[in-house]
Image (cartoon, rainbow, N blue to C red):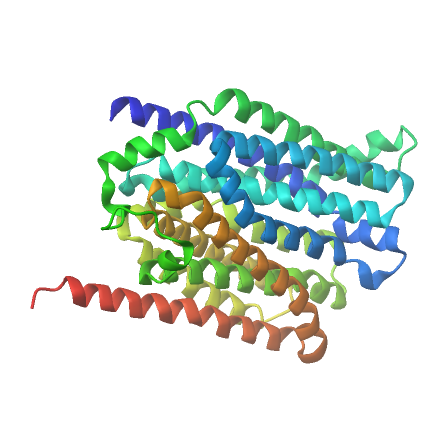
Length: 413
């Protein structure tokens, strides 16, 4: 396994690099999406439309990316996705320059499609590692988001100043910056992701064939999702995502209503993104050492606690702690669920099943983003947090039942 392990380390490093570059670009743009939406549409109620369009485009394209990754390989799929991001970012840049809202939404669609491809990179890391190392492999890619969460929000201002000097609206700067990062990421993947993870994954599967079905046939997505472990994995990721988005999206508006300054709001959101990504290296290793179910259980419980903690006070420190826990709980559900799903799949089942999973996760993001405003407006922030806590209980119960049944099945009569 020496050569395979060396290739796996190299592939993971390249995937980390492309995740870091891409996430910085996506987050830099996301910092301004609502502002650009309001400015170009001239209607405050349309401020959230660009993000919703971005999320929906990513959700519906994720499943199709699975087939693309199977057809042209992981390297070809990621490069195609990043180039799509370059084009989309250039479209949004031009749309802001000419003040065209429809064209801006077109660019957001392309950026959402690109992000869906980038997110599948975590599974490419998993497939090149043997089962006991898949958790840390996924976490080593996901942690690249930490780079984006730190760099992205802080480049919007300087990038705006540069394009402003060209006579272009300063809001366009972040999107030009994103295009550059996506282009660099595409070059890194094109030249660095060799051999293709699909080829290494096939060799690893030959030595660890536990994910191949008894009949030796390639199962359909529905057949795979009938398996209890696959159901637990998907439920943990989908509902963990929904809970995270429900609370995160509306917290800024809630704080604004309590007259918090923008720097205070930014500090709370930064604590959230730090919780989302910075501890990925820990969650992945715990998934390998303690088991996938235990990590998902910890994540679901943390989500419940974070939602309840968010109702305690509207002050910066309590909200910062609550949002940090919200990000941490999401991370444990996301990494644990991704690893558990990767365990269930043979090489020919991976890309399309993982793409379908990310379709569901993307739809959960879009639904959470849209519903958070309605719940907040009609029931208030605290009630929205309680509803989110109730949703977080579902994966908690599901994983307990699954672990109990599995333990009983393994216990000798």
